[in-house]
Every structure is written in structure tokens, then in C-alpha cells.
Length: 89
Image (cartoon, rainbow, N blue to C red; front, top):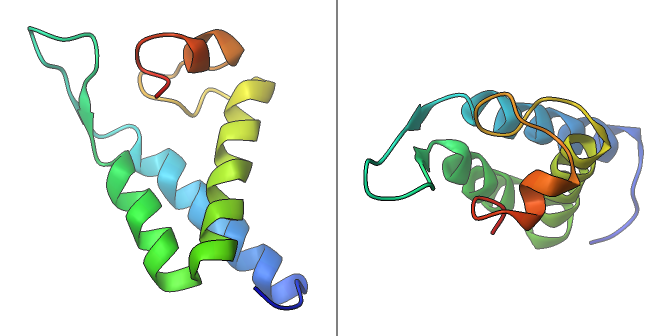
């Protein structure tokens, strides 16, 4: 992964923000509590553009922000309860 500097931290924060914006694009499925979202595209984009180490850290930042109380998960939800539910996987 290399050295983490301000430039790397900024890119990781940017991709955490991109993933949170893409989480608002969702298609609910009538037969499942889990919607189809564009959030997966944000995670794949972070991994391919930032590399495996920084991409994983950017998505960890996204999950930690949502668990801390920012409403950035699908449907403006937040908290540890969302991660433990059926949509948290």
C-alpha cells in the first residue's frame, strides 16, 4: 500500500463520499428486503482506481461513518443495527 499521505487520505475520503452518494440510487425488490443499489459500483470503482489497500480503507471509512450515525446507508439509514440486519452484508 505504501505511505499514507494527505493526498491518499483525500482520495480515500472522496471515494467514501462517492459510495455514500451512490447508495441513494436504489431499486427495491418486491421479493427481498435487500434492494439493488449503485453502491456496489462505488466499492468496485474504489478498489480498481485506488488499489486494494486504499480502496479497502475507503470502504472501511464509509462503514465506520454509517455506524457512527451519519445517514449514508441505503434509505437514509444509519447505525450498527443496519449492519447487523439483512441489508448489512
